[in-house]
Length: 225
Length: 299
Image 1: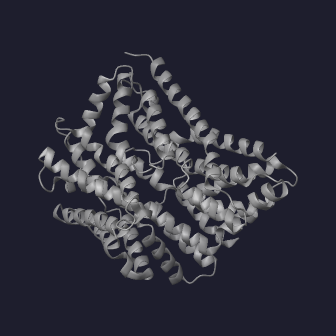
Image 2: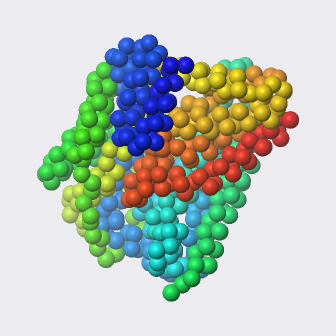
Image 3: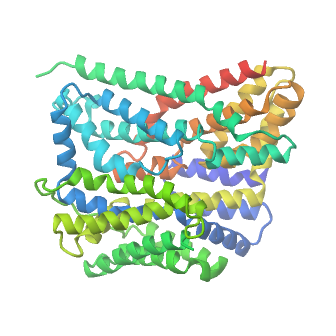
């Protein structure tokens, strides 16, 4: 039971808004000590895992390109693109992006889009421009806050990715499921696992699509000046 | 053979360049932080486990010192040049490269095809940007350094959380949590078991930040003994829907930093939890859908 103290540290630390990195280190140390490990063993395990997971941080290699394009006016260009597409709303734009992201991920193409590659340079500024045309940002209404529009763009990317990728049979999570079930002597074709990701993918598109549609409606209903 | 080493070389070079530019611009703490990251990417395999652990402690010390500066505000020029086409070079290269590299397993490690393609795409796009936009030689790296400073210490949070997961695994946290949840289920209730499994996947993912860590635990605690063996459910949908219930948890937790915290920094949101707030109203109904479907499949 003592090994759960690390989880308590994480929960409390995040809740009380201590520095997240410090919370993580303290939690790791406490968990290790509670399990009777030497502090140096914990440090070594932590360092080893840090080194093995560098690929997570490698994505920042795209930042020079994004930064350079933004300095040359990419976000403004993305906004102009929205201005040329009559009838494009935040909801329709993000719903289209959701479907694109789900379908691409279902085909195994998870890395062609993402927060650094597509959301920050393209999707977020386009969504903001569409929201402005729908009358957002003209007053103090919290719902039409440009921050909320940007957050919604990031949320749409995550939802599209998570509930599309499991339809692809060679993705990590499918292979993990197969591996774990193999350990219990249950042999399952990856295809059967991926088929069962389809109902949830459809439900995700419907639920999130409805929310986007409602977002459009709320923007339209707000009194305009 | 080209593999992950090439990707680390490209990423490490960017961090090193950011460190050098940070020194030039007298942003000492940021420069040191990025220099240590560059060291990790260039020489991480030669530092040893303890060495890497000390490297992490140094990174965290800099991050918590409060001396890292945010990126400077920058002004964008009036748009000119094929900006949208250039913005699509990286996604297109990632797509084309992945397909192409999988055809040449002798030259490119097939397991790393996408990351290698992404690195090639980043280099190609940077070259094209400099050629077509006539940007000054260092302006790309400088603009990237500014964005990296905008993300700040949050850049290494996903890696740190993954490492915490490794310590949790070593300490046997999963087994303890699984045992607790297993004991909390009322006997004889299929719905109770489905609820405990789906909710347990989501909650454990919220704690760990990763459904992959939760899955083996919840499968051994609930899915196999109860849903499969006692109630005779089909393992394929039980596994798939449990994992997807876990993904709903991923949408709700700051522990999944690369999906929830890093984008908030990248989009310069004031609210660190803004992305999570925007996701909650989709994640919760979807979790309920997964649990109900799970119950319907097993019953």
